[in-house]
Length: 527
Image (cartoon, rainbow, N blue to C red; front, top):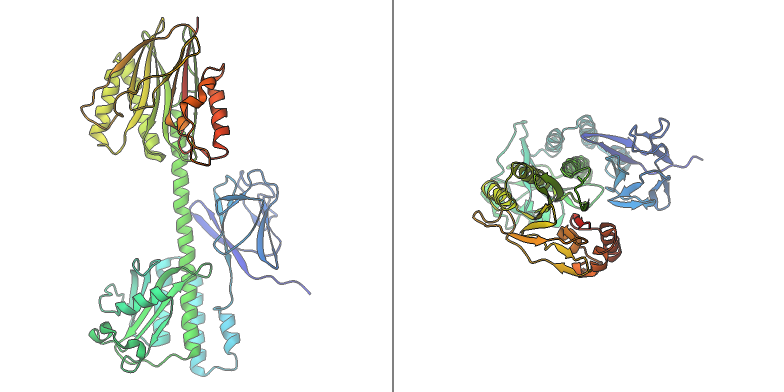
């Protein structure tokens, strides 16, 4: 005898497009090949990417040795048991699968089998209404139409005068999404409903059926029913199959007595509401996935902007050696470094714009461009920083600022340093002594009238100057301890200081990902 499996499906989200695919047959294969049960022609999806099977514990997904793996609810997994609502990412493809299960409790088939041979003509009419509603649900993809259909058919089923649907995940957040009269007139005024019943149903999760306000105990003390002359009220919380959380509420009322719904009628009313709730849940999941796609796209753009302002190759200058590196954290930040040739040498910069994401990356690009233009035109280092400060204070008004350390290196080793709220540069003398230079001025962009000072120094042959961002010094281990400058003295004095520091930082963090971008610029003087 052929084995049967519980019905389940995948909502496939590819950018702004979604489709639903039943998990059939089982085992169910996923990959780039055309003969896969779910074929996805995306180069970042492996030819044979994953497989879904089913056993006594339910459905499970298995990675088939794909190049980029699978993530279940954001966690890399070779194997994972699936629960309704689970989010499956296919490596770096940007394609997301949302796992859903099909329950027959409220389906037409279940209702028909439950009441077969035990239904009157009127009850068969009610079942027919459900079938019509279910067909209408399946024929539309617009959430507004789904909700209107639910109200329309529940009004016909109950004989109520008005119907409203509210969406929200708590009693406090419920908002009116739509309403209809029994004549089909749209209603947008919910001021004359029983608020207490709406609140109680949403809070308790219980369905309310008040068929006669004069004799129903549930109506006692409901001033809103008396005030608005309501004789009957029905309130049904909307909950999806994949979770028990509140999605919204269906509310029906009438100023006239309505016939009390029997068991069949209540079950059918519940079934219509549940079917609609499932569609609401699916729509929300798709909406959430699209929002996540927008965030991912924004971060990708920000990352490209961030990379574009970092020099591909460092220039060369007599008697100096330059090294630099930046490593982005999991979120795109506003770190950048630059080395700008000027008439009498060069200017090296390490900067860190506050915040992360697109805004930080864009502002970093603007600041880098401004400093390049100012310095190339012959402006002094202090004047350049003052110009950037004036711009930020006039345009972003304290919402964003930047910390930066900039050094003007002149032939012969004479330098000047401007520090705008950045961590102090580190000077490694030729004899091996490590010196943390003094803190500088305020961050750039906080105070409109701020003055920035330069510190003159002379780098003797064999000396080294290190500029770095606080992502390096504030890297944390699992206990929250920070990787401070004093821990890296020997690394900073090594032949390859950047490699040494980053390796030590990685060991110190013990797998804790960096919370901020990490940037270093090293200037060596050569005898």
